[in-house]
Amino acid sequence: MDTNNKRSCVILHLFYQYLWDEIKVYLLNLQEIADFDLFITCTSENKQLFNEIKKTFNKNINVYIEIVENTKGADIYPFFYVLNKINLNDYDLIYKIHTKQNITNELTSRLPKFTNTRFYIGNNIWRNLLLEGILGRTKIIKVRKKFYNNSRIGMSGFGPLLVKYNTEKYDIFPDKFEEISTKYKFKYIKEHQCYVGTIFVIRANLLKCLQNRYDISDFQTNTNEKFATITWQMEHLFGYIVEAQGYKIYNSFKKSNKIIMGILSSRRTLFLYKYYLNNFIFKRQLVK
Image 1: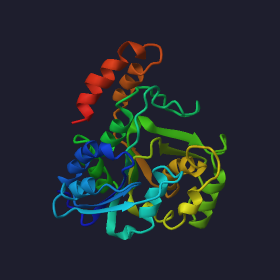
Image 2: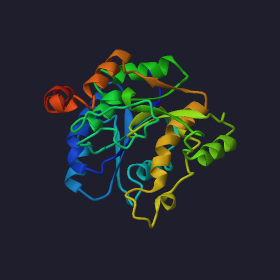
Image 3: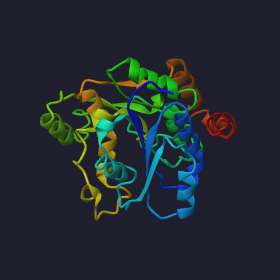
Image 4: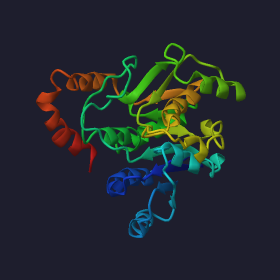
């Protein structure tokens, strides 16, 4: 059990409810070492599942489940829905997780060419790796200790999906970054990092600048796009506010492992062993 006095907070958007058994494994890892409040948002009622969820944890874990209209806000709007209701002073760390649907082809097919990450392992792996990076049995204690031992660590996640952007060079929503930097007197930075997939753990107080700034009206759109543009902006902004406030993003992934995974995910040779990677090696290691 952690010696930290504050509780942690997990904000889970359970869009794909059939994945609860998989998500549960990671949350039980956290229960072993820390007390936390679990806020779950869903888009539809499921009394049987909700009752099962509430019986999963011990008495020190508070579980709150709400139905939230998804609109085109993906997992981002439900996160703000909860964020706007809680007292961040009550928590040390916020875990933002969701049932990220796995990709059947290239893991980062939508990443622009100017990112520092090219990672292509396909199905049965995206969501698992993101969750493993912060809540896996071998990572969870290491990551939490890093936060408690280094007061300047502000965020952590799955290292290979931590990408770097030059805000001005690629014109990635600079107006939002400048606006929030000016309002809260942050240092405006030209380069920032963020986690693709928006599964991460962040120091709770760093989110105060985003609390009560966005609501459902910001995610409503009449366009044909699958998700509102703001959902992609928020993916960047979560990382930006960490570094703009003078904190660091901790990468617990060893450089040597990243190189190995980079080789394994080569486009030229991946087809030779992708099936075995996804169905035997990674699946057995990450889904228990």
